[in-house]
Image (tube, rainbow, N blue to C red; front, side, top):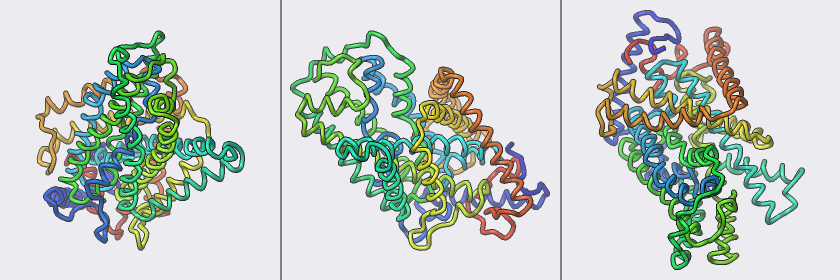
Amino acid sequence: MAGEAHLDGDATAAAAAKDKNAEADALAAADGAGGGGGARAGAGGHKLSLVPLIFLIFFEVAGGPYGAEPAVQSAGPLYALLGFLVFPFIWAVPEALVTAELSTAMPGNGGFVLWADRAFGPFPGSLMGTWKYVSGAINGAAFPALCADYLARVVPAVGDGGPRVAAIVAFNVALSFLNYTGLTVVGWTAVGLGVASLSPFLLMSAVALPKIRPRRWRGVAKDKDWKLFFNTLFWNLNYWDSVSTMAGEVERPGKTLPKALVAAVSMTSLGYLLPLMAATGAVDVAPEDWGNGFFADAAGMIAGKWLKYWIEVGAVLSSIGLYSATLSSAAFQLLGMADLGLLPRVFAVRAPVFNTPWVSIVATSAITLGMSFFSFNNIVAAANFLYSLGMLLEFAAFIWLRVKRPDLPRPYRVPARLPGAVALCLVPSAFLVFVMAIAGWKVYAISAAFTAAGVGVYYLMRLCKARGCLRFSNDEGAPAPAYQRQGSRNGDV
């Protein structure tokens, strides 16, 4: 699909597309050197700096060790500790390295959609957008309901009926408004939420030190559930590429993004491993007792009820950070797709004061709010499946651009030649295939339905563009973003 034309294939359009490629490469090089490139990013100087970016990545991926307990429940402390020690190196680090190279080479909003578009053309780019957006929206939809559940422990009245609905809606609206005020506000809010949600685990680890018995780390579950174990590792250590959708909003992305990713990988990995070591070493309970939320119980056993309550409050704060970061990433993905002409131009409209993509924020907020009221275990599993499809396409784009565009300016380059780059992607790709292979038929059916819907959206957008019933960023006479359709109109990539 790399040579597919969006409008027409005459020589003039091809020449124009080459000019756009040259312009984009120049912008990428300037931006990586600390210039002011990027796709209409953060006009007005309100760009993301290093510290808030680190915490945004942290919340896009983890938000703390909440949710890691099923790894102990399904396989025991030994395998849980080994998993969170080894898995970052075979999954998180490769994904973060690929994200760093491609985000700095093409520092425009849309991230992975832009990479697939540039490598393979508009149809794979649009399909990537569908897979990743649906996965992110489903992931984000869990957090308003989770916050309502935690709130119900303190205020039982919000546990059911109208009060629960009101709590979920209020949570959604408040955080949508926070995103409307800009990524700088969201980023520094994430810093505060991150410190508040991680502090009780650091304290628990310190108090647990004299109570730790290393022999407890060798415990294993009697009946191991490997499917739950690997899904827990995968769910808690993915979405490293989500930050790429906001690359156009980052200050000096060529330097800031790689540093932020390294710091976030380190903080996230230690944020899982240290509390797990402390709790499993200090508390003598069977693996079967390690259900969701057990960290709070473990903290109560180690230090008292005050720390248990603090961790439960931290879980709410973590959910707020997770939802806010997910909403930001998904909204800027829609903006990037609109800049590329894959969605109508209205999704790229920015608010006059805060310069945020308010239409994309409202649309994403409405979608996640609607999903918050469904019980969707199979849909969540389908979200993992769709995310896996997107990651396989992402790794393919990484390798393809190394082969076809070795001249593309890369302010950060993974320190490996082509065989090393292929090897870097092979292990995580094998794991992705494994995760997809153990999914059930319901997951396959739901994933196929979402994929078919994505194909339908792509061809519907082409029809609307051809008939002129909707306006797109790459229409004749429309202002062209710096990263519009690079390399997808001809065989240049």
